[in-house]
Length: 246
Image (cartoon, rainbow, N blue to C red; front, side):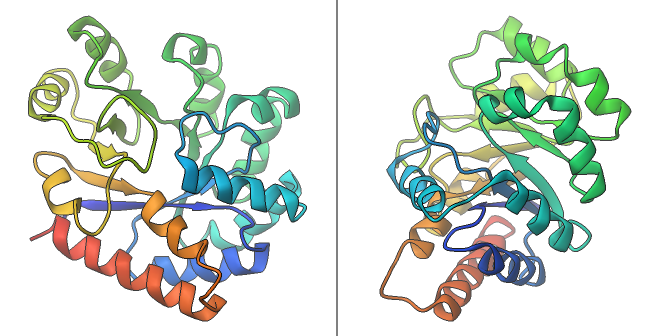
């Protein structure tokens, strides 16, 4: 069965809502939760997630909120922390590793940490039983794809196009997926531009999809109550899980 990874912005609209949403997504069949760490300059994210980051920060999000929330949900659903390198650097990677282990979090997604620059950190993560998710893009050379794929852990994050999250762009990923398969058995998940309308097509030939902006857009709808936001995101998650496995 193909997997669904759900991205949500941690602490938006507030931390206890995040716990309730995460647990509801686990019950809805989401396989992995990608907890976005709010940051002031989320360069790989589109305007929807960028705005959610800003609102969470304005509401007073702090890293301790991430750690507290994760302790509540880590034992209930496979959880990854997605954040930009600045907080990891300033708080020290060793701290994040220790806090992740304490919260039963299984790894990190750091989109602005290039593969080469991540190498010094990988041994300490792997020693702690954590994974650092690697990215592959359609623009990567065959040589670079081979280099990244051979070290991949947990899953490879295949970027659906060169750009930011939330866009409707698309590319033929079949040749890239085929090339990746020659170098690793690690599952390949596709992200960027995946929603309830595109998920079925995006899932062709890969092992799972990563959905972010489509969920966060619902959370940003101020006309919905918190209960209705959770219900709508859960409904969407179930629909996407069904469509990728048709």
